[in-house]
Length: 159
Image 1 (cartoon, helix red, strand yellow):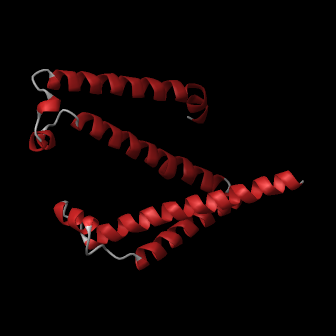
Image 2 (cartoon, one colour; image 1 turned 90 degrees about the horizontal axis):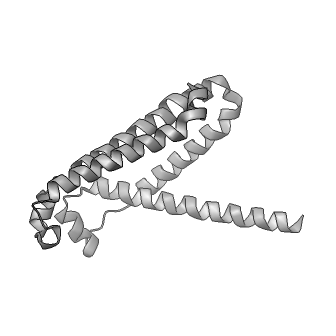
Image 3 (cartoon, one colour; image 1 turned 90 degrees about the vertical axis):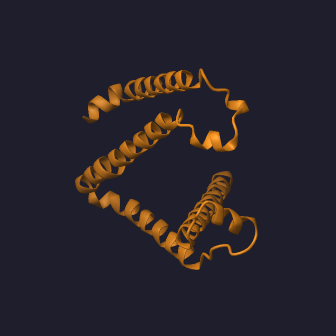
């Protein structure tokens, strides 16, 4: 399987992606021929279903890729060479701890535009805290990566 993916993986991914893109475009063009999207009201745009295939296909591809990466290949690598996997497990654990801390300190917005949008889209307090924690974790990881990049460049410049 590994040798097959090394030799044919990129071609297979390109063919699947291109095929789904063409299929998605055909579904849109067949569904749009009797509609003028620019003239549709917001309610009509919300109820249209011509884009559903593309959304579901993208979600399915993400789920399949995540399952393969995390469920199959990561576990195979973990069991094959546990010693070198310790750093990966430590990194994932630190990210989960950071997320848990941000989730614990997150407070849902009670006033302002975000509170109005949360009411409009029926976002619960827990989902709001999850979103806030996700954004804060992403920002923290970005900041940490920039600091590490800066120090590594300085170290390389001073060698």
